[in-house]
Length: 459
Ligand code: GLC
Image 1 (cartoon, rainbow, N blue to C red):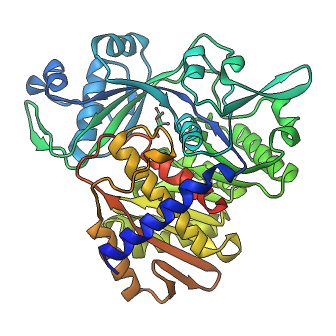
Image 2: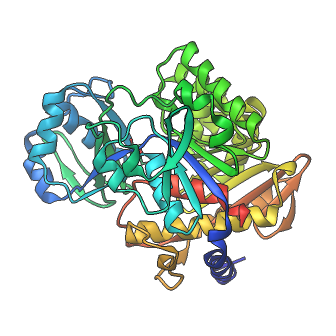
Image 3: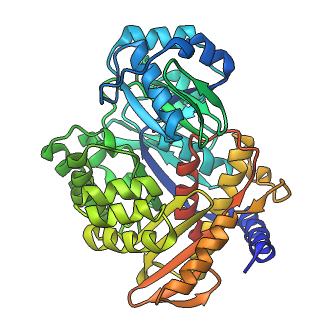
């Protein structure tokens, strides 16, 4: 099936979603919320950082203790076109970077922050967002129908973000977005950036750990009453102790206990510490219904699960559909999630256990998520559902179409619809995505595709 078929599929599903999004009940998102100061890397910044006289001195650590650490991180990200997130360990350097560089945009950030506003803008009736710390400036960045739970006089109240402010200290991350094709020269090397992506400097003040305080946990029945879907992220910031992971496991189990219809999604982001990944799988994913990540995060997850051989095969297949399907099955077997959505450049795949839902509806949700992410990459901010404009210039990814064809030839799963396969306990879906040459931004695209894909089948 070709360009024309998928274009029609996109048009039809988008029209359907635009009409119905507001009928989805409430969605709950947590934990990581912050402000993103976004800088588009250009010639001026490269010149300001004096790269042409610079020699890289990488020390293998993902930490920012000096301006040179920053230069090394940004350079490494641009060299291989990979997203990286390094943690601030020296406040003087952090302040220097904030003052000396002029940022282009200041927006809500963190998976939970981005997803809360996005879902609200595409018309979801009620979006509840939780983070144990909220500063004034962050509160002002939320959309009108985003609410927050607060605890007062023994009860939970859902209030406007401004009424939930409890700290003066906002958390600002610095995001450096770079474009494919940009030429970078240093004293020792010259290269062209192979893929548009970003380098993130993550400021991690204490007190924002991704765990519900006891007074919220005691009131889960109130908080999750009527909630259909929960989108969680930020567990990568948990302290690496069995104790804190165990606490999270208990909280996740409790959420399902108070509302048996709830489906919980966990968004897995690049976490290189293997022991941490292993704990995320054992304590977090084991309690969740759904999991989202990109192709490289899928490889990291496999390694965390001791699946080195499959992780290598996946990498050498250039993260193709056949190996992604195998990877998803393995992860499902080892974590007990019932749905895994993995996005790559040009296509995404989704494996579900049959009891999870109707595959045609699930495919529609994926198409709408692809449409939404495409619009966001072009416009940066989706102001409302009408912004999702099916007339923007695009094509369907040739790589996506080829990957689907290759899968059809090689798999022993049975094809039951365009892009839908079944075998044994599973449905597997492959969606070629829309693409354009005019991508403005990359930050938050993974969160967008995963969250809309996860809630989309409610429509
Ligand atoms: C990470 C970063 C945050 C960014 C988000 C985008 O959570 O910490 O700054 O907004 O990724 O996905």
